[in-house]
Image 1 (cartoon, rainbow, N blue to C red):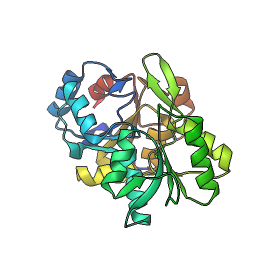
Image 2 (cartoon, rainbow, N blue to C red; image 1 turned 90 degrees about the vertical axis):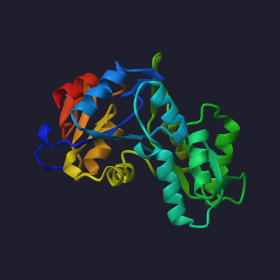
Image 3 (cartoon, rainbow, N blue to C red; image 1 turned 60 degrees about the vertical axis):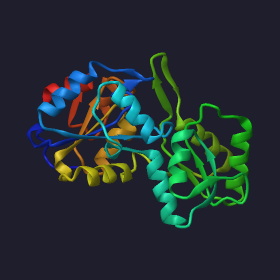
Image 4 (cartoon, rainbow, N blue to C red; image 1 turned 120 degrees about the vertical axis):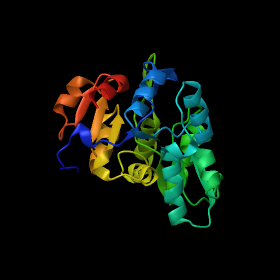
Length: 264
């Protein structure tokens, strides 16, 4: 974990989570055009690194642009890309896999040469699926029990919406783990792969990239594991009380991204 003394003066780039930081259930958090104008005025680079594997990268670009944020596809990495890369390393030729998930994870896997199948699969991949069914969970369970390796896009147990916290990918992973006694290989946060990918895109030193997220157990822990300075915003999942008990503490805590930028 990062042990380098932190100073806001060293920050050159932001690695930004999306759900709970930029929007909640698709509704913007704060005046995003003004916030990103302030980010640019400070000369800061930024990249989005999200555990959300539901949307495709073009869908993220479209949505963020519609909210007044200047962004290109190269400024977004997500857990769908991460799980597809892990599978490509293990199965270079691609092939059949069983997928529980939505467009984002399916497109990322297709890009790496994988396709959905119901049997004789290389692996089982589970992400958030808002059309989950008992039949899907049963098929995944049987395939894993027959020996297929088990991958999860991310362990987020909940998903923030304006109405409150709803089940996330981690809820589905927990159900299948309970049914198989097999723990999934996690591709997204808090594993460091997403942050390493983001650093490659940014081209800055590790100490110069500030991770900004709303979840202690994924964003903050993942940033700390990657040796990066971290900032928790309280606009999503984790609370101030939880942050006070977290060790090591995030380097910064702010009510929202807009408030955080004022500290930089």
